[in-house]
Image 1: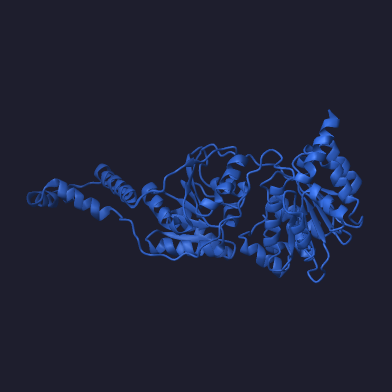
Image 2: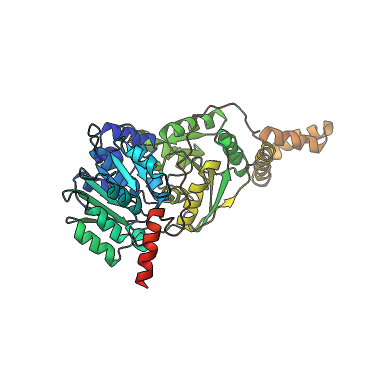
Length: 467
């Protein structure tokens, strides 16, 4: 596993990445970023959901000279949805360095785009038709571009954009770096690579087996402010033997661990800032059962080898489907069943659907439990403990005292008092968590998404002549 820290990135980019909650690279990022920083051409064969936007976005931001007002990088994407999504992520990566990113696509007022182009963006993310439109109008000059990215090239091929891509590349300096990403490698894509790329390195990332069969997967739609109370109620009802709660950032993990302890749960946090000794000590306590809840970031999830985890709670929805599979894969091991609950704010439902589509598995909706249900759950735990003592312990020493009690009180009252003593009633001690903004919504994307209007007629004509 590689952390971003090991890639020798600038302070500004590191700060932005940490803000986004990234700590450890995905396989495509670990392989692509170093090659790209050495200005090598790269063909990345990877599915959506593998973290490829950051794989090309981080080197682009690193190489942009913010003092230079020219367009220095161009990302070509097949649909307006993807163009918007990529530009949002690049904007976040470049926020500390103040890199200006502009998406341009069909269906949006062209005059507005022309005005935005006059404000000297450093990076353009656009759909093929609208990029060509601007080149022909003379409103988009690409003669200072040092990096070109062709994202989801196979989608662009399916939509009939190959000629457009060739036309765009003919307007970019030949002395440039080209990165091409595609889930599949059909011949026309290979030909583009041969013609327009200079000895490209192939980076191949296998799509991992996404389904995790032994895990019951649920989601709860909850507002950010109510997440913590819902989490503690679930813990009271489900009474997990060992549970992992995942948070998006280090700050989130620290605050959650503290809040859980405040409410009487034995919890500790683990993330990339901990020393190796502290990390091992927390894991040892967790494996031994001294702590019942481990709170962790994604970095802690990768490579964690813990058996016996019964429940996983995604307090914050993961960044991508691969992280989701990593997280929930901590439970349901060695043929045992496990449970995974994912908290989703109303604005993150799109991200939930994206995970479901990629993992090809629907999550079941779970109703957030009430305070009364939490109390019932704790009562059940108390009854189980009581029955366990009845069945396994020698009680002869206590029977005389029990008979005396029963002379003065009825049996139901006595048992009720025992249960009350044993039941951990839901704790409502107020806790303060810093609110995390929702993840940028992944837009629903039909097969190939929507081509931008300026290319629709051209694609149609081309397809008609092809038949």
